Length: 324
Image 1 (tube, rainbow, N blue to C red):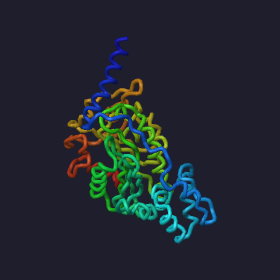
Image 2: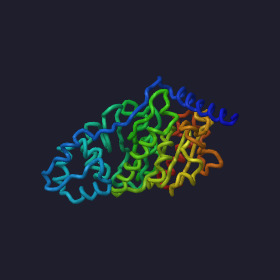
Image 3: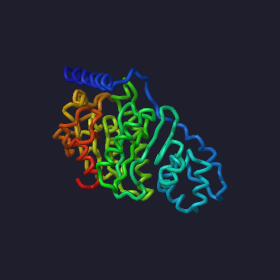
Image 4: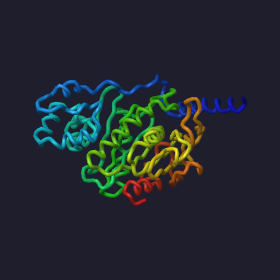
C-alpha cells in the first residue's frame, strides 16, 4: 500500500511539474483536426482526368506516389491549381508540387493546415536532391504561431551539417498547450505518432532517404510511440520526459537511438514513471535504457539543444550528415 501511494504521488507530481514548467497558462484538453481537409470533397468529385483521384484519408503514401507518377506534368500542375489544400498535404505527392500548393504559406512548405492552432512543415536545404534527411519533432506549445523557433532549429542544424543534408521542421501534430493533463499523458502523442509515421512514409514514397528524427521534450514521446512503424535511420531525443518504453529494445525499432539531457534542463526534475496513464516512463539517458548518450554539459537550458557552438549541436550535425 505504501508503494502504491508513493507511485501515485510521483505520478501526480509528474503532471504538476511538467505543467508548471511549461511556461503556459492553464489549458483545456487539446484535440487534433479530425475532419477531412477543406477541398477534399471537391477533390474526390473531380473526374476531369478520366480516373479516380486517391482518397486523402485512406490512400497510402505509396499509392499516392504511384498515382502522380502516372500523370503528365500538365495534369499534375492542374491538380495543384484546382486543389492546393489537398495536394499540399498529400503524403507521397512529389515534393515540388507540395511546395507549389503551399506557396501562400511561405517557401519550401511541405504541409500546411491552418485549422485550429495550425499544422505546418517547412524544409531547409535541397530536399529533392538530399543525400541525408532529418526531421525535427518539437514538444509542447508549438503551433503555427510559435513555429519560428522550430524552423530556426532546423536552419541551425542544416547549417552545421553537410551541404547534402535537408532538415524538415515538422509541427505536424497537435501539441500540448499550457498547463493541463495533455502534457503528462500520451493521448496527443499517440495521434502525433500516427501522423509522423505517415509523414515519413510519404518521404519514402517520394524516393527520399530514410530520415533521422530529432525529438525534443514531448516530441520524444511522439517519436517513442512512432518508433516501431517508421523507417528512421536514427532517433535522437533531447530533454525527454520519457519515450513510453522501458528501454531501447521495447521501442522495437532498427533505428540507432541517441539521447541527450543537459544538467541545467528542468526536465531532470520530472519523475520518470508511468502510472495510470500519467508520466512517460524511463529516462532515455539512464544507463539501463540502452541509448547512446550524447554530450550536453554545455547546453544552458531545456530549449537550447540546437544552440550554435554547443557540443550537442555538433553531435546532432554529425548524425544528420551520416558521420556518426
